[in-house]
Image (cartoon, rainbow, N blue to C red; front, side, top):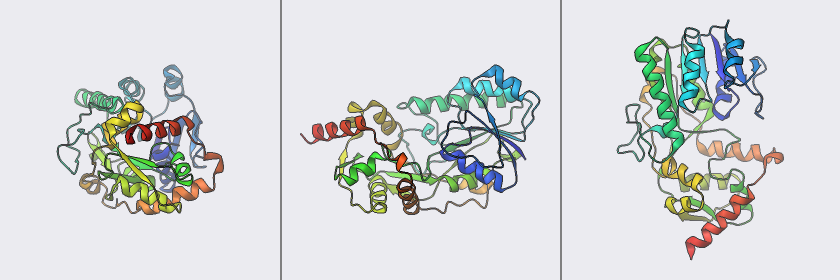
Length: 325
């Protein structure tokens, strides 16, 4: 198939780009070329900004696609621009939504694709919901062939799934406490990007996927205490965990708090029956214990990426001090 990825070098999309090439597809990547991840050598790279509507119309006017995937559409105006740009030019358009759009907190687990979409805590999620509504609207009124994909927390070797990135390891090494929200026992789903790619590629070019929504996640459920401990053990440390309520964290770091109250503070586990039915060979095989080792090895071999957010580190110390007073 002739496939266009808008983006294609991010955490999730990089694995999908690689698998796309391995499966023999004709892959085009349209992005600004700012990522440190190297795209597949066989992909055709177009450097450009999808938000520059006039330039995009000129670049893409004579092109037609089997599949277009927009990895970096976040607001309804992004989706509306895509509809105008690709209407009549693609057999399938895939919007990358988010599992954080599901009802938060959820009334019932595991989550399915029919779980209501509602997140009063996080603007990012509400914007994704609004994007989905725009696409469903054109599905009802025209032949724009959209598929909705809702990733949950997907990571690669470069992505530490705890606040602060490499700061987590820096605090471990210095014997500082690791903040985990709540009591650390809520259940969470981490999906390795190579596992996600297997399910995602199976949806490309599938007429039965048009007009449908899918989440693609691992079936491994971990508590946040386990996540922190697995990461620490992979690095050779025993974590000194302190539990702080999410609303207390939000007082000191509103951005962190929004991501907790609007997503990570609640147990989020998924029923993957739908993607497994549509893509029968999909199975998430990479455990987070394996993934944690990959993360540690990557950072050990990339000292240039071992930067820390000193302001966040100080904020964490103030937070801990205020909480234990």
